[in-house]
Amino acid sequence: MFFPIETFGGLPAKVLKKGIAARWIADIAGVKRAVKAWPDM
Image 1 (cartoon, one colour):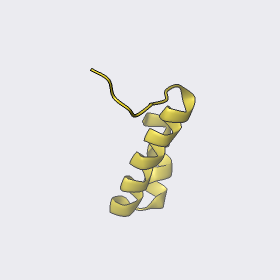
Image 2 (cartoon, rainbow, N blue to C red):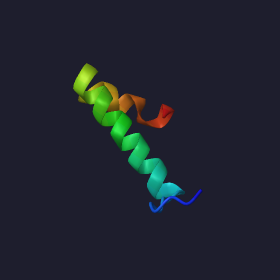
Image 3 (tube, rainbow, N blue to C red):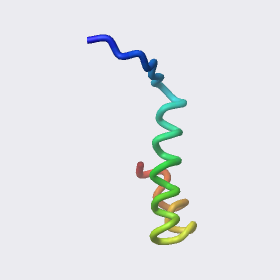
Image 4 (cartoon, helix red, strand yellow):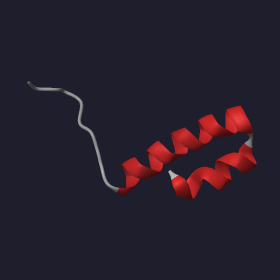
């Protein structure tokens, strides 16, 4: 199948994924918890 959306990978994708997760954690548990969780993601 052909998908008209191009995706990207590597470091930019990893940082974006971690950023989204960190923002969610910050909304739920606070910024300190999100910063603490960053290396574990």
